[in-house]
Length: 291
Image (cartoon, rainbow, N blue to C red):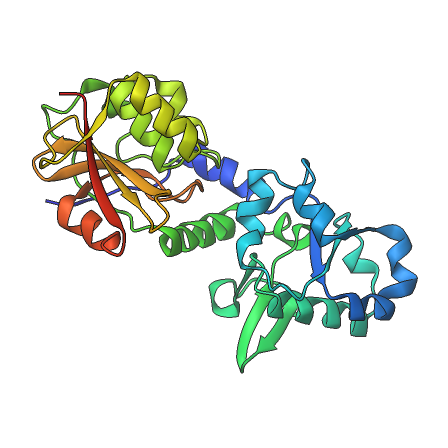
């Protein structure tokens, strides 16, 4: 029987404080810079290439909130601004900047119906749809109940809140994480899987990359096998180049300990085999075992 998981009040409190960074980012085309020329002395105008290589701006909180990987290639520059800067723009320039943001495919742009409490001057229209562009200045002034309701709804766009109870015979160390959300970004499927096989709780909160994951599996004496998975085995999905795209830990009872993404909206879950394998059916599947 499925269960429903929800973030704790403490986790929601952290989400509310970190979901929208205190530093505003605006993605813009070079041809639009002249339109805002007089206002640019109060911001940093960063070429996109430098921005994406900058240690400060590569932080997971920013990348996950603004969805860097979705941003249109035509956006050649990033305006790094303090939250009050946009409030000082005149109406026409403010609307133009917000329209560019909504059309850039960046994150923190939502259907207006999700946040009817948003200020009207942050609404724009794209393809006949009313959208709200979220910025720190007005997000911080929303009430806690409004933020909580919105974040719970938004979390469901990343991952279902449905899960399965952890079986009684599952490894005991999984109880600390199974069917729980995180308070911070970073943990991904690879760190979740390594935690499951090592029992090292701190690893569950790390952001692990494929080469680190593969080397860790080898040190734990896990090897590929041409057999069906048994409890304690790891299942890995790779693309046509052999790069790992996902990994999960087999608990038994057709259930897996799994994490579907690196955001705090992706909980550590107990998922059913058919659901998991259906999601990754477009990739090549491999079983790794220490048996």
